[in-house]
Length: 182
Image (cartoon, rainbow, N blue to C red):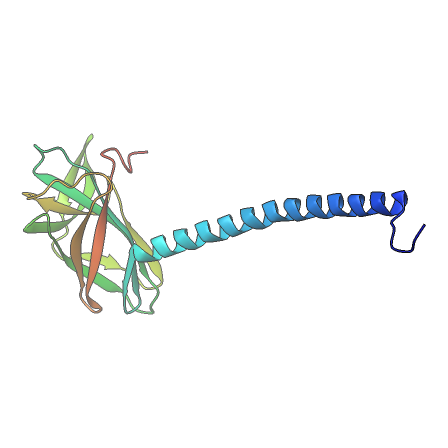
């Protein structure tokens, strides 16, 4: 037998080595692909969540949203979280929106056995180092005589004006008609 010829044992070892290498490569390739997909998905989620938040000074406005309305509705409500990371309180004093020329800040309260809505004429205080939630059946933005009826998945533009921080632009994302009712 010449020195260049491979024995059966050498050939079997080579095939075994290749088989183990292929298995190892494909097993790791699947794990790598899965990890890469998770990383990309999380980066997309972070980018999307950061794209749907606004800030001015120490205030961060998170997830401004509204519900889809029927074509016959003439009012809509807006909701969001306002985070004050600063050492001083501020006050949300007004809101504007492209879907309405008349916008008010509201709250809800119980009057006997029924809930009623009332305007917060002096605005909504955002305490220092706190988060204020504007949510259904609580503090919220009220859009009157709405000019447009955006559908779920649409967005509309608004501006929030704070007593100290000033004015910041927001995009209200339109959620399903029953959003926030859980």
